[in-house]
Length: 190
Image 1 (cartoon, rainbow, N blue to C red):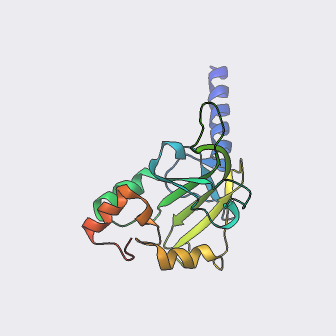
Image 2 (tube, rainbow, N blue to C red):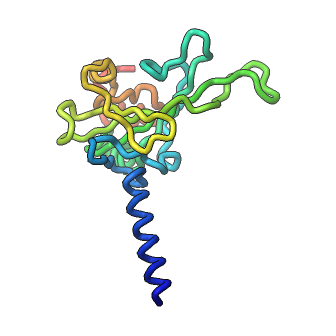
Image 3 (cartoon, helix red, strand yellow):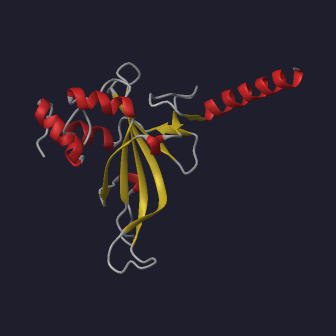
């Protein structure tokens, strides 16, 4: 009996500690410093699209590198709401996984394929927490929490001016573009 109680207490403590470092929720969660907890299960989220050479800012490839891939994932609850309304609900999290592009490997002779992780970024909609309603976070490799990018960075103005729907580049996500078109929520035409 004592062993079972001790084991249960140890398991609960382990889960609480782990919860402070990563998140398995599809809602944004923040630590005491205001950093976004890394959504550990993002690879189970809805895959929106992959682009090649569309990165800018600190994760953009250098002139000597092949262009990088970006894989965009949406939190499942946000995706379902978008599919119904053509708009992103409050507490949306979009995650962008940036990977190097390789062209020589195994039997590949001409194409590009994804390889090493360059970094992860997130775009979060929280209408109460952020004056601009949307905010951007950067995760280093293996980071449990992402740092908030300052509102003066170009990503804020670029997304506000060029995002097809609610600050986001839906024009590059073919499965969502038709929904936004049907629902009449496009503010920037592709």
